[in-house]
Image (cartoon, rainbow, N blue to C red; front, side, top):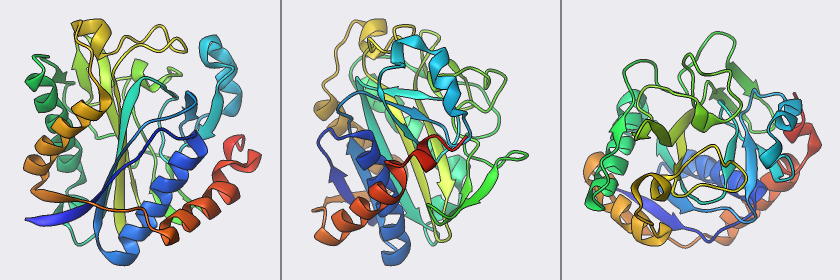
Length: 272
């Protein structure tokens, strides 16, 4: 069993969260060490998929006043509020980095198992392409993140025109009572793979059309306790041992640079 660095972060602003994911991807590439990060968002934030048009945000009134950040992965917009978010970085030498379809399913099986511990019976949506696999016109090299990206993102299927990612459906999405409550996207760097995703714990006032796990099951989930359960099942599914790690000054400095150069700028967030 190989091991991965584990980071459990307090809620943070959207631009910082996306910058840390980018910094960890670079760290993974440079060190050859896998990383897993669990985190939340404060204040509530709307993230746009890489290829979404900025003007689309005005089509969704409940979230129109939220802080906004553009992700480096594709797909639909996500209201990050009452949720648990994860990001997983794997170096190219790891078999999971090469078997990215299997990785996607393995992480979502771990989510199902953690929910089952709570007596919540979720399922995976049908078969087909994995979100994040290249589709026509959706591969790009962006100098601001310095990576070759696979950016189809969440919801690459027939519902992909919908603004919100959680109103879309892709193979392997986590479904509860017909509603999507978990989804992920992948982006491949030069020497590592990033997969990050969201687990919708409870309905947000900024996306009232999307019920969360508590709304559907009647069972509230504490993000910290649920995160601990998820770690156990991720460790089993991925055959990885997670070692709690301190966020180094070097990583923090790099995340700060990326945040200021990319994720806080209009050139990035409004570039489409």
